[in-house]
Amino acid sequence: MDIAHVQQLQTTVLWAAFALAAAFGFIAQRTHFCTMGAISDIVTMGDWSRMRVWAMAAGVAMIGFHALAWLGWIDAGQTIYTSGRVIWLSALTGGALFGFGMVLASGCGSKTLLRMGAGSLKSLVVFIVMGFAAYASLHGVTAVLRVNTVDTVALHIPAGAALPAWIAYAWGLDLALSGLLLALLLGGALVLWALLGRGFRTGNNLLAGLGLGLLVVAMWWVSGGLGFVAEHPHTLEPTYLATHTGRMESLTFTAPLAHTLDWLIFFSDASKLLTLGVVSVVGVVCGAFLQALLGRNFRLEGFHGTQDTALHLLGAVCMGVGGVTALGCTIGQGLSGLSTLSLTSMIAVGGIMLGALAGLRLQMYILERG
Image (cartoon, rainbow, N blue to C red; front, side, top):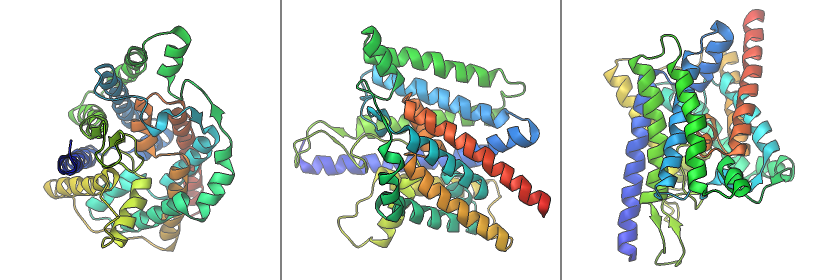
């Protein structure tokens, strides 16, 4: 493959990623998909409906990811989530910080983009502050703090951080088959649990659970299948086109917010190229905007006062720092990370849940005092 064909393929990958992200934004906006909202519903009303939607999406993503690997369409080991170094403390503390922040900021990174598409000016502020905090945690002052503290604590697992690798290593099974069987077991259990919920099987719930899970799978194929070049003509090495990490990627919304700000600020710099993450950010906003227009619920919204502003700014900082530290958000470590059956992702999701509970307690305390 010559360089002209590689460049053409990269453009195709970017357009495909944009289309999938726009579909994600459209469906999530239409169905009111929200991880923070799901946790809040459980705590405040005892309603598990939105959590069942999230579980179904995660289960579908697990089955789909490992089906792709079993078919040989992607290499399941080529993600940041399946490294043999399990940074459990970073995942736990970063996840908790992210979960706490998403409550204060009225939603996670993906929800922030959805609200932006629907006209929320305060979500635009959250996006900018979260992106700045994420950039500082990738390359700046909080990055130094992160690298010299929580990132130094890790488990080193030769077989890798994904559960299927442990089974294949311990029992001498084929890795792809181990992944598919475990995904069918765990992912199938999540889907079944969701479907058995009373009143769950509505059009919006099924659309969100099935549709968003499949979009995560499709993004894995776009970056890991369509965008994979076995030998790049310049480097003569295997390459995943348009990815920032150099490995295959799916939907995630913490570091890509920082990369989007970077691309916008240094647009005239020819070295700043569009990546899958950047076009995904834009795609989600566009998809949400289209749905908001069609649903006639687009409206401009600002902050409601000093306290509202302060809480959203604090939440945005917590999400930016926490999301980078945990290697992802409710979508990145949640749907995308869990689809790989990564131990690190499971720890990060647990941390997000704990942080969200702490944030909800603080929110209730503020409301009671107010």
